[in-house]
Image 1 (spheres, helix red, strand yellow):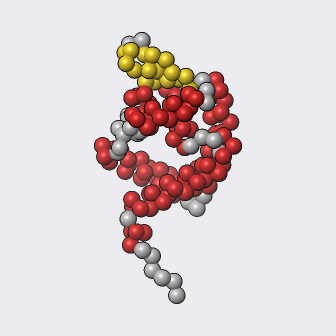
Image 2 (cartoon, helix red, strand yellow):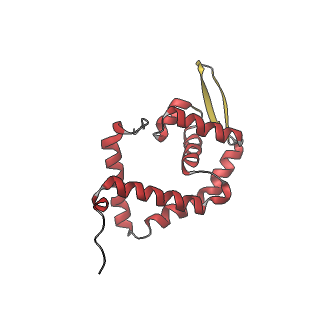
Image 3 (cartoon, rainbow, N blue to C red):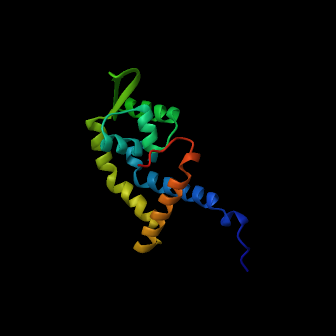
Length: 154
């Protein structure tokens, strides 16, 4: 006879945290050769999509606090994947942009990143995936103000 599950299994926060752990493990497995974390890949994706951004705007794109965004940018800059320069409109701020090397790396990683997403959602039908994504989006939009870093959702 199987023991009943812990009450944790009825808590969305617990299940979301566990799913995040699974996603990170799948991402790192599929993309291990590139030595980037999901957050680093997300930051490069945002820069590739938005162009030059200051640290605060970049943090808002990803829902990160400014300190974490700065640390991630420093690591990516050290690898030559991001370049930063002073913002001509605000000398206290710096603008970040993805480098040619950063674009090449994110392009090379895309199929591995997509495999990680697909593997995570493999147990779901396409209809269930659509509902899952819509539900996640709705929950994030409704609770965005409680996140550690502001997330621009427009």
